Length: 285
Image 1 (cartoon, helix red, strand yellow):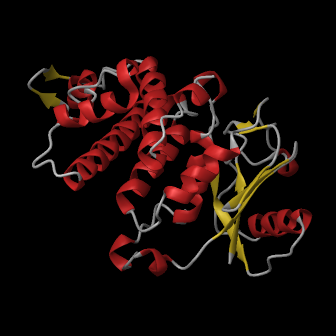
Image 2 (cartoon, rainbow, N blue to C red):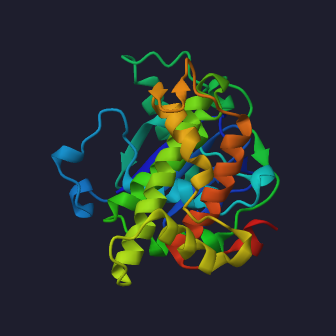
């Protein structure tokens, strides 16, 4: 089965279509949409207790969308995917791109019970123009991330999904605070992934100091993170807990740079954790 999903003009996309073994992003001036093969959720170990009424993305979609974002370069050339919650599934592997788009648009028009008037629909539906990055993401990185990201690894998928949601929320100034909190979720997922690696290597009761050294050993002096991302500790406490030992806060004391800096660092960290390569020169080029 393949899932077709429209992408909102609220995102920021590569200027040309991207095709990999795990999915396609079809890019035109009037519409951008994805075509991604998916399996039934139970194939990936999902049970009824994993059901979310608020998130309908398949794990394959999360992996594909985030692999595109991870394959961007530094923040001035990032890709921000913004998938619509509206989608349609097909069994035909040989439909043309035009027919796939037609089916998506028909699906939207048939969704009479939903108020979609406030959505940023694509230009083909009368919405605003898309924004594009004038470069192509590195397909080698996309394929490497997809090949090494098990859809049975729910910890990794939770971290990747948090990155995706952070990117979506960052497109709305009113939800910038929540975008950074989603980055904190992704940060915690990365920390737990590192602790899992350390335990597998024989470290008993690994700590944030051990996690920081693990990254330092991989990247050298480029990343001094021991204890692991300790610079964000107080910020996380102040942001998530209205009353804490640092004071009482009517709103989270955050800066826009908290998003940009942490998002850039997490891009590099997740690339390493997923592929066991630093990619640093490629990503910062």
